[in-house]
Length: 314
Image (cartoon, rainbow, N blue to C red):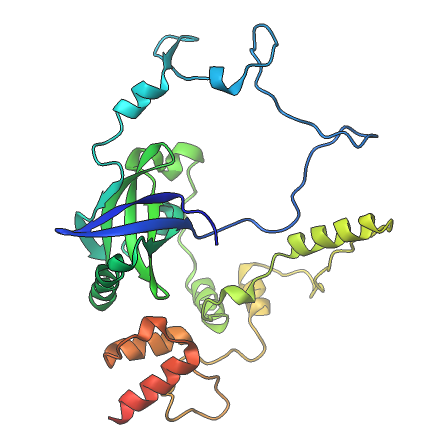
């Protein structure tokens, strides 16, 4: 178990729910440190006074912010920062509910799992989860996390609630802020048709297990090999060349699989079509929602298939 990053109260109307927030993500793989070349001496970073060059104890470090005047700063004491925290900084009030998937991924900053704080909080917690799951809505709130205030989305996901911090509107850049204008051209009818055909031929369902961290694996292998006194040479795979394409249309044609997969509505679990794969969990969840199967969000794929088959037969 890991330590919670926030402990407080989630207000669902007038219903208080004591909750704990846990980080939903972590970086994996070897951690690389810095050393002085030719030695086993670690490089350490210390807090130093840029004027005197002397190290400063942590208790003597305070924060400051630049003013409108160049090279001028104001010093902010810890108690001053504490005083301006929003009232009820240990409370998240759900102040509205928006449709699921209405917030684009661009706005998401970090995501946390939300757990009931005490056994008595389990009932209102499950009630909120069920209400959001049935209505396909997510709750909006604000919260103070890690010394700053954030917009928050509270969502049902895999049997638990999640809380995702969002960027503020003035923190999300527009394309014009960071890149030159993209030249506007009208795609040719033939090229557009081929591009759409390629997208359909390669369309699939999102499964995170389809992706792997090849660099992380090679890095771990390199660390293990060198720890044993060995060496390793990585030879990257090179795709076979099919000859130089003679234009955009020809490149698209060569990109198409020899036998594109036919895409269509997934067959019912009760009547699988020969040669076709079993329906995905997402398709089963959608069908389970149509059939009002209760507890579907907590089911495995096989349990969903069985529940949908049973509900279809009723």
